[in-house]
Length: 354
Image 1 (tube, rainbow, N blue to C red):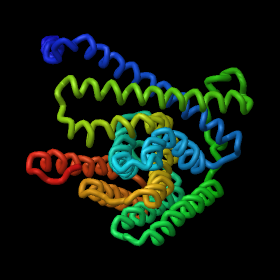
Image 2: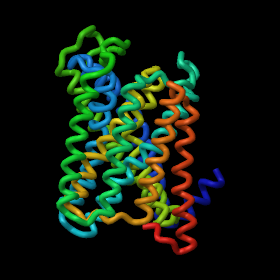
Image 3: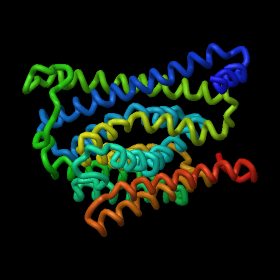
């Protein structure tokens, strides 16, 4: 209580607004978690209705559905044509795959450890053909997108931008075609039609749309309130812009994976992340390559390298051992700590950290 009082007075006359921000922060987090549970239930039923595989539901429907709202921010920034907006867009484009390949992997790994009622324990029972394909595509397209920062012939950039989109279409085709049907796994009754053994398509779609809307709105309030709290506590603007804000932006949309991990649906949980990694490292960078200068700062390049190394280690482990363990995913979080260390140390030593 004494600490809270000190914090209250530390923010001066804005003490009441600080308390309100804390309340909104907690309320928005609860709303996101509720919406994530609603979304996972609805998207599974949608996959069953469309007769899709687990890979298609996790790596395409869920991944793109949760990533698309946040992806619109860099897209709008790029298409606005303003130089400053373009730089913001480039940073957001590269930051998303980095967060997914480090922190999101870490969250899934921790979930496998925390949920003791999982039959498979800390080993993830994913569809390895789907998982390895996701990571393989990510490594190729993200490395190719980053390499375009060193190519200054615009016609080559246009070709590569088109190639990235084509590669994603190929990826979606193979993902939809292969894998076990989501209907073959046990699905809880649809929340919007609990008494119906086979709910119609309308309540299924309605639940998905409502859940996704709640996630988006909750995430917005979460970001704004977290920013207000950080500023009230005099958190460094650099720390806020490069570390806190990206975490608050990316992770809420991936809380779906936590619920799938709890239920032992590991292919859906990992696909929700790896599918988003492929989407956000191919289609979205294609716009940046085609419509911006695509000049990457040292910090941006570091995030690319760390994301690729993290994903490569997970890919190597899964391929070598023919299984995926929580520990290797938890280890991915260390690459995020490396990035944080660079930002903090660089701010003191005058390194280029923007």
